[in-house]
Image (cartoon, rainbow, N blue to C red; front, side):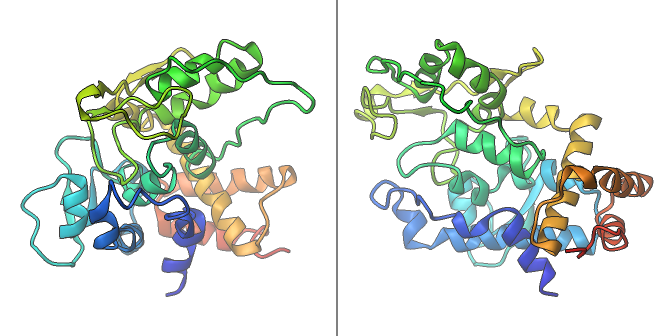
Length: 301
């Protein structure tokens, strides 16, 4: 069925995976083995599995497993995987990966060539998983670029921006949704530290392997809730409120895929009805897709 390939391709923006591909000099394995193709296939295999097993939609986001082969295992730091190209179900015992949040397709597409981008990853999570569009700066507001010459990490660079209250308001709402992924490098591989940035150049290469800095993947949400690293962040997304937000986002992305336009504010009542029907079936994917197809919003334009 074409839907099983085309919908996740569109929803998760898989065409953008190599828009800013990892540096071929620093990440030779990624390019030599064309790992990006495996990453896309990982997403689609996982989605097919979810539909076949009629899983609850929230499990797509925070499952503790995925489908990987030998090349993905090399990037993800997993041992004991058969040396072939077959994607097999694998449970990540450390709680750092699994589901869409731990997949290289997301992590690579939201990174720059030589560095990671908490903002890019945050915006992706907000828009594609939680159905929230970050508020852009007000028109006409003049933003002064801060002095970041002494900054050694991306977090220090962004902290400099928050000294300007005009910038701080947006950063407080956006940044915490991206810091959790800082341990994942541009190729989606795990790292415990990174080389400091060239002063004044957020996208610059590091100064050298002897000047590595431990990664701080903690943050505080605007609500005051905190997390320390990806495992606590993943736990935060398992709350009933965030599970519902993810299902609503899934419904909206499905309507966008079917109709070619995003739902409008006038559609919210009908979306609430779809969400209620989904909840009666524990948010299972088949019943949710059926509820969307049965809605007056489906292909109405």
